[in-house]
Amino acid sequence: MKLFNLKKKDAPAGAAATPQIKRSEPVPFGLAGGYSPLQTGDKRLYRAIREAVPVVDACISKIIRLCGGVSVACGDPAAGEGLRKFFEQVDVGRGQRGINAFLDQYLDSMLMFGQAVGEIVPAPGNDDIAAVLCGRVDDVQVWEGDGPLDFKLCGRDQYGQVKPFPHQNLLLFTPFNPEAYAPYGVSLLRSMPFLTELMGKIYCATGVNWERMGNVRYAVVYKPGEWERGLAQERSKQLAAEWSRAMESTRNGCVRDFVAVGDVEIKVIGADNQILDSSVPIRQILEQLVSKTGIPPFMLGLSWSSTERMSTQQADLLTTEMTAIRRTLTPALERIAQMWLRMHGYGCGFKIVWDDINLQDLLEEAKAGWYKEQARKLALENDAMERSISR
Image (cartoon, rainbow, N blue to C red; front, side, top):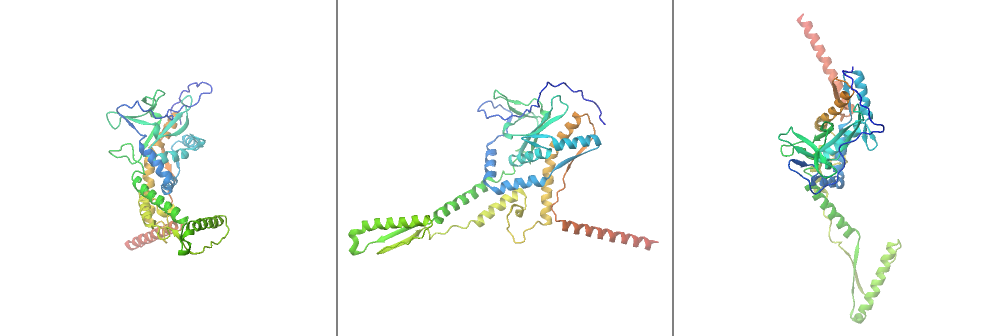
Protein backbone atom coordinates (compact mmCIF):
# COMPACT_ATOMS: atom_id res chain seq x y z
CA MET A 1 0.00 0.00 0.00
CA LYS A 2 1.02 3.61 -0.45
CA LEU A 3 2.35 5.27 2.70
CA PHE A 4 1.73 8.79 1.51
CA ASN A 5 0.35 10.61 -1.46
CA LEU A 6 2.66 12.97 -3.26
CA LYS A 7 0.97 16.18 -4.29
CA LYS A 8 1.40 16.52 -8.01
CA LYS A 9 2.63 19.85 -9.24
CA ASP A 10 0.94 21.28 -12.25
CA ALA A 11 3.41 21.13 -15.15
CA PRO A 12 3.15 23.56 -18.05
CA ALA A 13 1.59 22.16 -21.18
CA GLY A 14 4.10 20.53 -23.47
CA ALA A 15 6.81 20.47 -20.82
CA ALA A 16 9.48 17.85 -21.34
CA ALA A 17 11.99 16.19 -19.08
CA THR A 18 15.33 17.96 -19.14
CA PRO A 19 18.56 16.02 -18.54
CA GLN A 20 21.46 17.67 -16.73
CA ILE A 21 24.37 15.92 -18.45
CA LYS A 22 24.80 17.46 -21.87
CA ARG A 23 27.58 17.02 -24.35
CA SER A 24 30.14 19.79 -24.03
CA GLU A 25 33.13 20.65 -26.15
CA PRO A 26 36.54 20.89 -24.45
CA VAL A 27 37.56 24.37 -23.37
CA PRO A 28 41.29 25.20 -22.99
CA PHE A 29 40.72 27.25 -19.86
CA GLY A 30 38.57 27.27 -16.74
CA LEU A 31 40.12 24.32 -14.87
CA ALA A 32 40.23 24.97 -11.16
CA GLY A 33 41.85 23.22 -8.25
CA GLY A 34 40.01 20.29 -6.72
CA TYR A 35 38.58 19.02 -10.00
CA SER A 36 39.57 15.64 -11.43
CA PRO A 37 38.77 15.48 -15.15
CA LEU A 38 37.68 12.07 -16.34
CA GLN A 39 38.31 12.85 -20.03
CA THR A 40 42.00 11.88 -19.92
CA GLY A 41 44.01 10.90 -22.98
CA ASP A 42 43.62 7.25 -22.04
CA LYS A 43 40.02 7.30 -23.23
CA ARG A 44 41.05 7.91 -26.85
CA LEU A 45 43.70 5.21 -26.56
CA TYR A 46 41.17 2.68 -25.27
CA ARG A 47 38.79 3.50 -28.10
CA ALA A 48 41.60 2.98 -30.62
CA ILE A 49 42.56 -0.36 -29.06
CA ARG A 50 39.00 -1.62 -29.19
CA GLU A 51 38.60 -0.56 -32.82
CA ALA A 52 41.95 -2.03 -33.90
CA VAL A 53 41.89 -5.39 -32.07
CA PRO A 54 38.78 -7.51 -32.73
CA VAL A 55 39.54 -9.83 -29.80
CA VAL A 56 39.31 -6.95 -27.33
CA ASP A 57 35.99 -5.80 -28.78
CA ALA A 58 34.68 -9.37 -28.65
CA CYS A 59 35.75 -9.77 -25.01
CA ILE A 60 33.86 -6.66 -23.89
CA SER A 61 30.77 -7.73 -25.83
CA LYS A 62 30.93 -11.25 -24.36
CA ILE A 63 31.20 -9.91 -20.80
CA ILE A 64 28.17 -7.69 -21.33
CA ARG A 65 26.15 -10.62 -22.68
CA LEU A 66 27.29 -12.99 -19.93
CA CYS A 67 26.26 -10.57 -17.19
CA GLY A 68 22.69 -11.15 -18.35
CA GLY A 69 19.51 -9.26 -17.61
CA VAL A 70 18.04 -7.95 -14.39
CA SER A 71 14.64 -7.78 -12.75
CA VAL A 72 13.28 -6.63 -9.40
CA ALA A 73 11.33 -8.32 -6.59
CA CYS A 74 9.18 -6.25 -4.27
CA GLY A 75 7.24 -7.02 -1.08
CA ASP A 76 4.15 -5.09 -2.17
CA PRO A 77 2.47 -6.81 -5.16
CA ALA A 78 1.16 -3.53 -6.60
CA ALA A 79 4.54 -1.84 -6.24
CA GLY A 80 6.29 -4.88 -7.68
CA GLU A 81 4.07 -4.95 -10.76
CA GLY A 82 4.53 -1.23 -11.38
CA LEU A 83 8.28 -1.43 -10.87
CA ARG A 84 8.51 -4.41 -13.21
CA LYS A 85 6.69 -2.51 -15.97
CA PHE A 86 8.94 0.48 -15.36
CA PHE A 87 12.07 -1.66 -15.75
CA GLU A 88 10.69 -3.08 -19.01
CA GLN A 89 9.42 0.15 -20.59
CA VAL A 90 11.58 3.01 -19.27
CA ASP A 91 13.01 5.23 -21.99
CA VAL A 92 16.81 5.03 -22.12
CA GLY A 93 17.31 7.34 -25.08
CA ARG A 94 18.23 6.90 -28.73
CA GLY A 95 15.18 4.81 -29.52
CA GLN A 96 15.80 2.15 -26.84
CA ARG A 97 13.64 1.09 -23.94
CA GLY A 98 14.10 -1.07 -20.88
CA ILE A 99 16.56 -1.04 -18.02
CA ASN A 100 18.57 -3.84 -19.66
CA ALA A 101 19.30 -1.61 -22.66
CA PHE A 102 20.55 1.08 -20.28
CA LEU A 103 22.59 -1.52 -18.43
CA ASP A 104 24.35 -2.61 -21.64
CA GLN A 105 25.50 0.97 -22.34
CA TYR A 106 26.40 1.60 -18.71
CA LEU A 107 28.45 -1.60 -18.41
CA ASP A 108 30.17 -0.98 -21.75
CA SER A 109 31.38 2.43 -20.54
CA MET A 110 32.45 1.03 -17.17
CA LEU A 111 34.55 -1.75 -18.68
CA MET A 112 36.22 0.30 -21.39
CA PHE A 113 36.84 3.57 -19.53
CA GLY A 114 36.83 2.44 -15.91
CA GLN A 115 33.88 4.69 -15.05
CA ALA A 116 30.24 4.95 -15.98
CA VAL A 117 27.94 7.92 -15.49
CA GLY A 118 24.18 8.03 -15.81
CA GLU A 119 21.24 10.19 -14.97
CA ILE A 120 17.69 9.74 -13.72
CA VAL A 121 15.48 12.22 -15.56
CA PRO A 122 12.25 13.01 -13.66
CA ALA A 123 9.03 13.63 -15.54
CA PRO A 124 7.33 17.04 -15.43
CA GLY A 125 5.68 17.35 -12.04
CA ASN A 126 8.31 15.15 -10.35
CA ASP A 127 5.82 12.32 -9.91
CA ASP A 128 7.51 9.77 -12.16
CA ILE A 129 10.77 8.92 -13.92
CA ALA A 130 10.72 9.92 -17.57
CA ALA A 131 14.02 8.37 -18.63
CA VAL A 132 17.25 6.81 -17.42
CA LEU A 133 20.16 7.93 -19.57
CA CYS A 134 23.78 6.82 -19.86
CA GLY A 135 26.14 9.81 -20.07
CA ARG A 136 29.54 10.30 -21.65
CA VAL A 137 32.47 10.12 -19.28
CA ASP A 138 34.18 12.83 -21.33
CA ASP A 139 31.51 15.36 -20.31
CA VAL A 140 31.86 14.85 -16.54
CA GLN A 141 34.42 15.95 -13.97
CA VAL A 142 34.63 15.15 -10.27
CA TRP A 143 34.92 17.80 -7.57
CA GLU A 144 36.77 16.45 -4.53
CA GLY A 145 36.02 17.82 -1.09
CA ASP A 146 37.89 17.40 2.17
CA GLY A 147 37.27 13.67 2.36
CA PRO A 148 36.44 10.68 0.16
CA LEU A 149 32.74 10.98 1.06
CA ASP A 150 32.60 14.59 -0.12
CA PHE A 151 32.61 14.64 -3.91
CA LYS A 152 30.32 15.96 -6.62
CA LEU A 153 29.93 15.39 -10.32
CA CYS A 154 30.48 18.54 -12.35
CA GLY A 155 30.16 19.73 -15.92
CA ARG A 156 30.72 22.83 -17.99
CA ASP A 157 28.03 25.45 -18.37
CA GLN A 158 27.41 27.66 -21.40
CA TYR A 159 30.27 29.93 -20.32
CA GLY A 160 32.85 27.14 -20.14
CA GLN A 161 33.04 27.14 -16.35
CA VAL A 162 33.15 23.90 -14.37
CA LYS A 163 30.28 23.78 -11.90
CA PRO A 164 28.59 21.00 -9.92
CA PHE A 165 25.35 19.69 -11.36
CA PRO A 166 22.41 21.10 -9.38
CA HIS A 167 20.71 17.77 -8.57
CA GLN A 168 23.36 15.30 -7.47
CA ASN A 169 20.74 12.83 -6.21
CA LEU A 170 19.65 12.20 -9.81
CA LEU A 171 23.13 11.27 -11.06
CA LEU A 172 24.66 7.79 -11.20
CA PHE A 173 28.39 7.14 -11.01
CA THR A 174 30.06 3.72 -10.87
CA PRO A 175 33.85 3.16 -10.85
CA PHE A 176 35.30 -0.14 -12.03
CA ASN A 177 37.88 -1.76 -9.74
CA PRO A 178 38.75 1.46 -7.84
CA GLU A 179 42.21 1.61 -6.30
CA ALA A 180 43.88 3.83 -3.72
CA TYR A 181 45.70 5.81 -6.44
CA ALA A 182 42.79 5.54 -8.90
CA PRO A 183 39.64 6.00 -6.78
CA TYR A 184 37.50 6.69 -9.84
CA GLY A 185 38.14 3.31 -11.42
CA VAL A 186 40.51 1.77 -13.93
CA SER A 187 39.76 0.43 -17.37
CA LEU A 188 39.72 -3.24 -18.25
CA LEU A 189 42.14 -2.31 -21.06
CA ARG A 190 44.67 -0.57 -18.80
CA SER A 191 47.49 -3.10 -19.29
CA MET A 192 46.86 -3.72 -23.01
CA PRO A 193 48.41 -0.74 -24.91
CA PHE A 194 51.96 -2.15 -24.99
CA LEU A 195 50.91 -5.60 -26.20
CA THR A 196 48.45 -4.25 -28.76
CA GLU A 197 51.19 -1.99 -30.13
CA LEU A 198 53.47 -5.00 -30.59
CA MET A 199 50.73 -6.97 -32.29
CA GLY A 200 49.99 -4.04 -34.59
CA LYS A 201 53.65 -3.85 -35.61
CA ILE A 202 53.72 -7.57 -36.40
CA TYR A 203 50.60 -7.37 -38.55
CA CYS A 204 51.83 -4.24 -40.36
CA ALA A 205 55.22 -5.85 -41.07
CA THR A 206 53.47 -9.01 -42.30
CA GLY A 207 51.29 -6.96 -44.61
CA VAL A 208 54.30 -5.11 -46.04
CA ASN A 209 56.15 -8.39 -46.62
CA TRP A 210 53.19 -9.92 -48.43
CA GLU A 211 52.83 -6.80 -50.52
CA ARG A 212 56.48 -7.04 -51.46
CA MET A 213 56.75 -10.81 -51.90
CA GLY A 214 53.21 -11.81 -52.79
CA ASN A 215 52.96 -9.30 -55.64
CA VAL A 216 55.84 -10.81 -57.61
CA ARG A 217 58.30 -8.51 -59.36
CA TYR A 218 60.87 -9.66 -61.92
CA ALA A 219 64.41 -8.69 -62.84
CA VAL A 220 65.34 -9.28 -66.51
CA VAL A 221 69.11 -9.34 -67.06
CA TYR A 222 70.48 -9.23 -70.63
CA LYS A 223 74.14 -10.11 -71.25
CA PRO A 224 75.17 -9.19 -74.83
CA GLY A 225 77.72 -11.32 -76.66
CA GLU A 226 80.87 -10.18 -78.47
CA TRP A 227 79.13 -9.81 -81.82
CA GLU A 228 76.21 -7.71 -80.48
CA ARG A 229 77.88 -5.22 -78.13
CA GLY A 230 77.13 -2.39 -80.48
CA LEU A 231 73.44 -3.29 -80.45
CA ALA A 232 73.10 -3.71 -76.65
CA GLN A 233 71.04 -0.57 -76.12
CA GLU A 234 68.65 -1.35 -78.96
CA ARG A 235 68.27 -4.99 -77.88
CA SER A 236 67.59 -3.89 -74.27
CA LYS A 237 64.76 -1.63 -75.39
CA GLN A 238 63.26 -4.45 -77.45
CA LEU A 239 63.43 -6.88 -74.50
CA ALA A 240 61.86 -4.33 -72.16
CA ALA A 241 59.02 -3.65 -74.59
CA GLU A 242 58.31 -7.33 -75.19
CA TRP A 243 58.44 -8.12 -71.46
CA SER A 244 55.98 -5.30 -70.73
CA ARG A 245 53.57 -6.65 -73.36
CA ALA A 246 53.81 -10.14 -71.89
CA MET A 247 53.08 -8.87 -68.35
CA GLU A 248 50.20 -6.70 -69.59
CA SER A 249 48.63 -9.72 -71.31
CA THR A 250 48.97 -11.73 -68.10
CA ARG A 251 47.16 -9.04 -66.10
CA ASN A 252 44.35 -9.14 -68.64
CA GLY A 253 43.96 -12.91 -68.26
CA CYS A 254 45.77 -13.97 -71.44
CA VAL A 255 48.81 -16.25 -71.68
CA ARG A 256 51.65 -14.85 -73.76
CA ASP A 257 55.11 -16.34 -74.03
CA PHE A 258 58.25 -14.25 -73.89
CA VAL A 259 60.92 -15.23 -76.45
CA ALA A 260 64.42 -13.76 -76.35
CA VAL A 261 67.61 -14.46 -78.30
CA GLY A 262 70.95 -14.44 -76.53
CA ASP A 263 71.97 -14.69 -72.89
CA VAL A 264 68.85 -13.48 -71.02
CA GLU A 265 68.25 -14.29 -67.33
CA ILE A 266 64.94 -13.71 -65.49
CA LYS A 267 64.77 -13.69 -61.68
CA VAL A 268 62.00 -13.08 -59.15
CA ILE A 269 62.85 -10.21 -56.81
CA GLY A 270 62.62 -11.22 -53.16
CA ALA A 271 62.03 -14.92 -53.84
CA ASP A 272 65.05 -15.93 -51.76
CA ASN A 273 63.67 -14.29 -48.60
CA GLN A 274 61.18 -15.95 -46.24
CA ILE A 275 58.38 -14.30 -44.31
CA LEU A 276 58.87 -14.67 -40.56
CA ASP A 277 56.47 -16.98 -38.75
CA SER A 278 54.19 -14.75 -36.66
CA SER A 279 51.96 -17.45 -35.19
CA VAL A 280 54.02 -17.90 -31.99
CA PRO A 281 54.38 -14.23 -30.99
CA ILE A 282 50.79 -13.45 -31.96
CA ARG A 283 49.52 -16.33 -29.84
CA GLN A 284 51.64 -15.21 -26.87
CA ILE A 285 50.23 -11.70 -27.12
CA LEU A 286 46.66 -12.97 -27.48
CA GLU A 287 47.10 -15.19 -24.44
CA GLN A 288 48.04 -12.14 -22.37
CA LEU A 289 45.13 -10.09 -23.70
CA VAL A 290 42.55 -12.83 -23.19
CA SER A 291 43.82 -13.65 -19.68
CA LYS A 292 43.15 -10.04 -18.65
CA THR A 293 39.48 -10.37 -19.57
CA GLY A 294 38.91 -13.80 -18.00
CA ILE A 295 37.02 -15.11 -21.06
CA PRO A 296 37.88 -18.69 -22.16
CA PRO A 297 39.72 -18.61 -25.51
CA PHE A 298 37.33 -20.92 -27.36
CA MET A 299 34.45 -18.49 -26.69
CA LEU A 300 36.34 -15.97 -28.83
CA GLY A 301 36.97 -18.39 -31.70
CA LEU A 302 40.55 -19.19 -30.63
CA SER A 303 41.02 -22.96 -30.93
CA TRP A 304 44.42 -23.47 -29.36
CA SER A 305 43.72 -27.10 -28.47
CA SER A 306 41.97 -29.92 -30.31
CA THR A 307 39.99 -30.72 -27.15
CA GLU A 308 39.15 -27.12 -26.24
CA ARG A 309 36.07 -26.95 -24.02
CA MET A 310 34.95 -25.22 -20.88
CA SER A 311 36.00 -27.11 -17.78
CA THR A 312 34.22 -26.92 -14.46
CA GLN A 313 37.01 -24.78 -13.02
CA GLN A 314 36.78 -22.31 -15.92
CA ALA A 315 33.02 -22.09 -15.52
CA ASP A 316 33.33 -21.39 -11.81
CA LEU A 317 35.95 -18.69 -12.35
CA LEU A 318 33.93 -17.04 -15.11
CA THR A 319 30.80 -17.13 -12.94
CA THR A 320 32.76 -15.48 -10.14
CA GLU A 321 33.93 -12.72 -12.48
CA MET A 322 30.40 -12.03 -13.67
CA THR A 323 29.10 -12.01 -10.11
CA ALA A 324 31.72 -9.44 -9.10
CA ILE A 325 30.73 -7.18 -11.99
CA ARG A 326 27.07 -7.54 -11.00
CA ARG A 327 27.90 -6.47 -7.44
CA THR A 328 29.46 -3.32 -8.87
CA LEU A 329 26.35 -2.47 -10.93
CA THR A 330 23.73 -3.32 -8.29
CA PRO A 331 23.95 -0.03 -6.28
CA ALA A 332 23.11 2.05 -9.38
CA LEU A 333 20.08 -0.15 -10.11
CA GLU A 334 18.98 0.05 -6.49
CA ARG A 335 19.03 3.85 -6.63
CA ILE A 336 16.84 3.82 -9.74
CA ALA A 337 14.33 1.40 -8.20
CA GLN A 338 14.26 3.21 -4.86
CA MET A 339 13.62 6.59 -6.50
CA TRP A 340 10.74 5.16 -8.56
CA LEU A 341 9.15 3.66 -5.44
CA ARG A 342 9.49 6.87 -3.43
CA MET A 343 8.12 8.98 -6.27
CA HIS A 344 5.02 6.78 -6.35
CA GLY A 345 4.61 6.81 -2.59
CA TYR A 346 5.72 3.25 -1.79
CA GLY A 347 7.84 2.53 1.27
CA CYS A 348 8.23 -1.21 0.84
CA GLY A 349 11.50 -3.02 0.40
CA PHE A 350 12.78 -4.52 -2.82
CA LYS A 351 15.59 -6.67 -4.18
CA ILE A 352 17.49 -6.59 -7.47
CA VAL A 353 17.34 -10.05 -9.06
CA TRP A 354 19.84 -11.01 -11.75
CA ASP A 355 19.28 -13.75 -14.29
CA ASP A 356 20.96 -17.05 -13.53
CA ILE A 357 24.37 -17.58 -15.13
CA ASN A 358 24.24 -20.94 -16.87
CA LEU A 359 27.59 -22.05 -18.32
CA GLN A 360 27.26 -25.80 -17.93
CA ASP A 361 25.87 -28.38 -20.33
CA LEU A 362 22.39 -29.67 -19.60
CA LEU A 363 23.72 -33.23 -19.56
CA GLU A 364 26.28 -32.37 -16.89
CA GLU A 365 23.62 -30.62 -14.82
CA ALA A 366 21.36 -33.67 -15.12
CA LYS A 367 24.19 -35.96 -13.99
CA ALA A 368 24.92 -33.71 -11.03
CA GLY A 369 21.25 -33.77 -10.02
CA TRP A 370 21.14 -37.54 -10.37
CA TYR A 371 24.23 -38.01 -8.19
CA LYS A 372 22.75 -35.64 -5.62
CA GLU A 373 19.51 -37.60 -5.43
CA GLN A 374 21.45 -40.88 -5.15
CA ALA A 375 23.42 -39.50 -2.22
CA ARG A 376 20.18 -38.28 -0.60
CA LYS A 377 18.60 -41.73 -1.06
CA LEU A 378 21.60 -43.48 0.52
CA ALA A 379 21.56 -41.03 3.41
CA LEU A 380 17.86 -41.73 4.09
CA GLU A 381 18.43 -45.49 3.95
CA ASN A 382 21.34 -45.22 6.39
CA ASP A 383 19.26 -43.12 8.78
CA ALA A 384 16.40 -45.64 8.66
CA MET A 385 18.82 -48.54 9.26
CA GLU A 386 20.38 -46.79 12.26
CA ARG A 387 16.95 -46.08 13.80
CA SER A 388 15.93 -49.76 13.40
CA ILE A 389 19.15 -50.95 15.03
CA SER A 390 18.79 -48.55 17.95
CA ARG A 391 15.30 -49.90 18.65
